[in-house]
Length: 402
Image 1 (cartoon, rainbow, N blue to C red):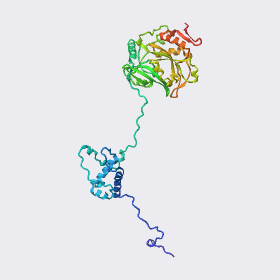
Image 2 (tube, rainbow, N blue to C red):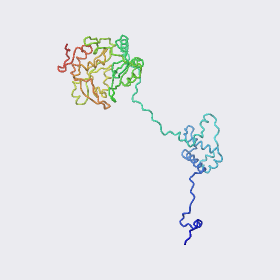
Image 3 (spheres, rainbow, N blue to C red):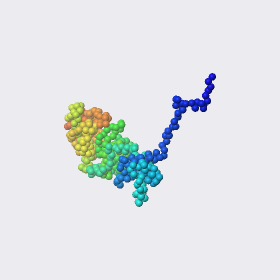
Image 4 (cartoon, rainbow, N blue to C red):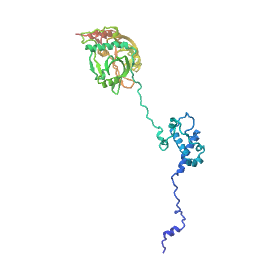
């Protein structure tokens, strides 16, 4: 019967398989000396690239943060004779043989010295990697500038002030942005504002908007969006709108009481214009000679039609002037109301897309013979139109039946 071997006997036997041949595990830790040599090698690599030690080179050269850290490290080695002696075998550029730097002679030299706080391990915090992009700016920012033709508008401000004092106009709290129309007066931050022109009307996010030319009573002007003006009027606790001084349909308190628009020449408020479209669209081009836009502007006709190709009120096409009439003391809103009421049955019913891809229905294009327009506008200007109507079947302006 075989006897069991003891542990000593088993260990004493020869290990043919090599299971007991255990080698000690190599240490993964880097010795302190090796770490110092590795750190000094970074200084050598800098010299290899630049041709000089960290902190040296041309005086006008700007020293970066990482270079300052290497310069500070080299200085520490130079200040420690024992450490410098141990590293000399690795100093292939002779940097450790240099004398210790002289003491700073001025405040600027003192500030240029390196601080151990800039040395590893946190030197990377000084490297800019991610910077916030600058805030986007709008394409156009309206600023008030001197109004070059303010003398043209000054009489309007004087008249509005006189009408307010006499009670013809009333100052009412601003409450609705739909009240902003050409020819309107508002009070913003204590300054009276006149809406001289309404350009590029469009609908965005379901809201009406347009570019306005605003004239301020202090002799300046601005190119503001309609909704921007409305926002400022809402924010101003004293934001006001001046009411229309005319109580009637256009010029008078009733259809039978006509107020003449005769006034001094300095009361000119703009012009009524007639233009035809140069649109290449077949449905519009075939109406040439019968289709006209009748509108009102407080500026010049040339300015009004300059951007017609991008304006949905001009059918997104250039326009050619046909007639213009000087307007005196004319209220733009009431003019549009009576014009649309007079020619409502012959107004062009069309929907087009504006430059933002939004549907728009222009309201100032009418299918009329030019002689009818030439007959109607003087009657609008002298007020007699309130006793007439347009008979589209007879193609004539006829008296209103009593």
